[in-house]
Image (cartoon, rainbow, N blue to C red):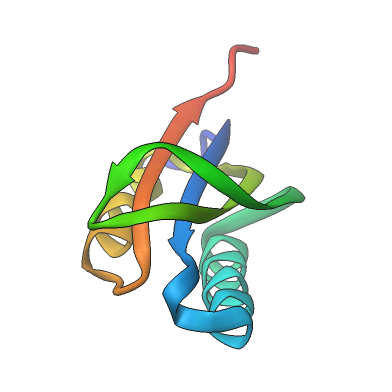
Length: 98
């Protein structure tokens, strides 16, 4: 049963140091990556927000929420890519309850 798909939400916080174009490019990169491995249901850019606590000496981050549907195996790969991408301060992927 490899074609089972689940609904997920991912939130990632990007460093504001990459600039507006860098932020837009990273969001596009993740949208394309998710679209290539599933379906992007919604993209909600929350914009610049103050961080609850300092991360890498930064006090502000650019928050983006993406709702998507994909195979469970893809989430591990997405998480790995978040971890190795410069400019990503924090990321979270959660499975939505059906």
